[in-house]
Length: 378
Image (cartoon, rainbow, N blue to C red; front, side, top):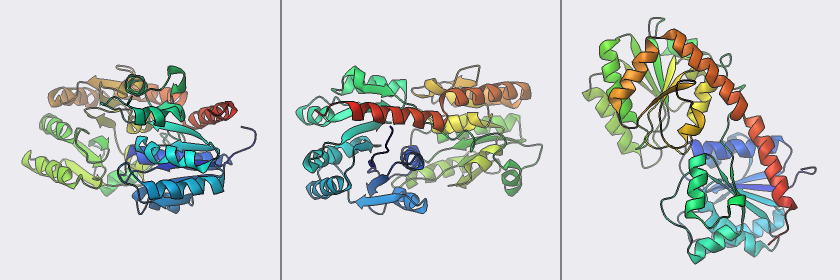
């Protein structure tokens, strides 16, 4: 776009994970490109506080569920007075508020939706036909989500695009992190091989599979340590307690460190020798591209959006979901073969630079914005 136009990014989610982090990053990056950008999010949410800490323009609304007539009216007035030309929804449920608010505003902004989670319910009823008729583009973060959108919504194929989530390949690079500081902080020595895991405590992320694999790995290679970074989102605290209890019951407390939420992820990843990604189902997996950008080999489940990222035998090793014995076997293969770890790591960073660098993603997003702005309003 020649002249930057006002853009509203929305993410009415109270959770704090990959989806919300991507919403924050896209908002920040678009602002860095010179666009007047505002992030609309839930009142008193973690996303709101993180966005404010970055100095972003934030508006907060009380949104939960699908029916919000007062919020729709308030948002419509804000859209009209701010003269937003584009509204980019980062969460599917945002559409139930954004679409009617945009219609009430009287200025017909273009609406886009980044689709990060698949749906198992058909959305071709009259309400969803109305909602999706106002969406200029759906940006699916992986091929599996792209197919899911076409299967479950009334969107025309030409209006659905795959646009992978991305990372800053300079922030996540072999030279960017201070792994020695992190390793020393956790008491690791040069004799320790560190298997890393990064992700919030949420059912389906595979923490239990990782711990059962860890028990087998440590039995065979006592020098291996497992470093688990991440915290539970609201409502998922019971799952975290279950995982910590499982660790104790398996007798591997001495080999597993739960690091909690960390802001220094590049440093944490620099402390890893390899990354485990045992998710049962994943629409994409930003942690994988972060690790690959840092030249870490990965062991990942061969499911869903992971297939867009990892090339089996070239940038990492695949294992089936929920198979802790196979996960342990793959981890041991990499633990015992430093040359293989190095080869996979180098190939992983090359793949990230080609496909998942944020600069390339934002360049493409700008082109998509220009494309929809050039289209006549319907």
